[in-house]
Amino acid sequence: MRNFEDSYLHKGLRKKLVDQIRDKGITDEFVLQAINNVPRHYFLDSAFERHAYEDRAFPIGEDQTISQPYTVAYQTQLLQVKPFEKVLEVGTGSAYQASVLIEMKARVYTIERQKKLFEEKKNFKYLSKYPALLRFYGDGFEGLPTYAPFDKIIITAAAPFIPEKLIKQLKIGGLMVLPLNEGDIQIMYRITRVDEFTTKEERFDAFSFVPMLSGKNG
Ligand code: SAH
Image 1: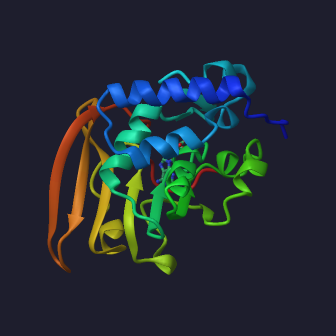
Image 2: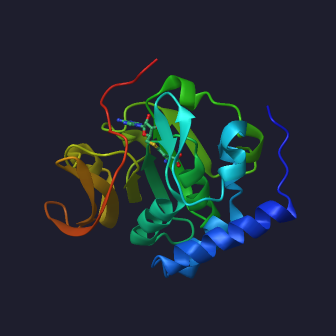
């Protein structure tokens, strides 16, 4: 386990990153505050640590990436998280996105299908300060029926279709934000569960994510 420190230098770089994200169009100050609170360098391999506050995605092992901070802020803003809401995340990866949600006072249930990433201990000590963060090893296409319904669901891998089982795990009035495949890119969608049988779909900008794959690995 690495010995982490959140220095004035880190904090200063993080503030600059938040300003950049704001300049790119993120307006929700609650989201920006959460980004400002999470030491992203704790979530990266030491080789990338000095780049932690660049607005870029980086490898986290197993061919996966920690999302670009702008993308994390974008999805989080669309999710409209309020304190104490139950949020399901598909694709824990480094647990950076999950930590941002926790900083917004959500209760977060996050699923990862890659055993190695699920067992990653690098930022374990940091995550242990978040009792409201629950991590699961499993297939996000199945969701977490035992813990449903959720106020919000966020998928952080490129979904080939809108997973029907996840819609069923949303509360009426709940929202799901996901990048949906359209050719080689993904379009960010926000689905509202209007009632038992009806959903509303909104389309936003184009992004590029690693694929959402079915089944567990490891
Ligand atoms: N949210 C992450 C970024 C994730 S990258 C972060 O903040 O670092 C996408 C992640 O989704 C990868 O770790 C990948 O293994 C995982 N993934 C892909 N398909 C999945 C599925 N069906 N269920 C759970 N996790 C999945």
